[in-house]
Image (cartoon, rainbow, N blue to C red; front, side):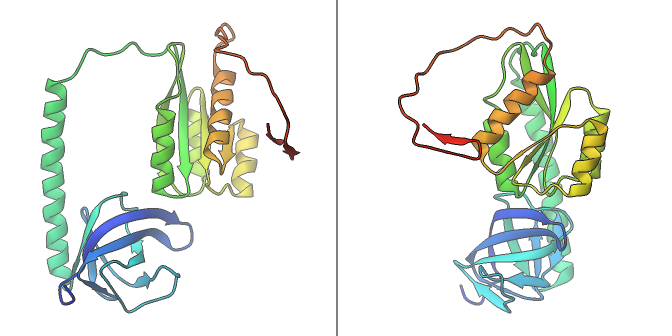
Length: 253
């Protein structure tokens, strides 16, 4: 509807170190104007930095268009719905209503979960603590889902912190204060000063832009923190038939 306030869904979000919390939105219906108010979850935000898919400032956008809005108080969650309001008071009232509804749903969900909880599974003998940083919330959630497949009865992991944004001083301090902890950076920037701080404090930072390389590095870092008596069990063997390419430590075999 060309005359209705826009609504849609968050398809990507991240923390821009220079501009703050940003979200890429897909408008499913209606129209969005610069100067409107957007409600996502419990936050109502005036639309000031409003860009199209090319990163150009735009005065308005309509259904089926992806847009980027910057200036949220916190990074919106992936998949959250949004709605546009022309008036600040109306937007703030809607945000308060959504907040109350979310709290009620969370309380009900907790009650059901407690009632239907299964018998607790045995915890791993050794637990490694992870601090995850990723370039976007989508990347963060993808990594978290993949990490669920890693672990054994002898060696497991716990996520202390997981968020979008570059590795910062608080991440290093958290790793220093925690037992068996290291930082995982997936496509996230690591400033030189932060890397130096981590090196001086003995904090390991595992970083890569390729998820399977990152997972291999995480496994090795977990094993390095495991007790020396942790047994190694070989699951199988492979024979290399041909080497096609080799460069800078990478091979295609």
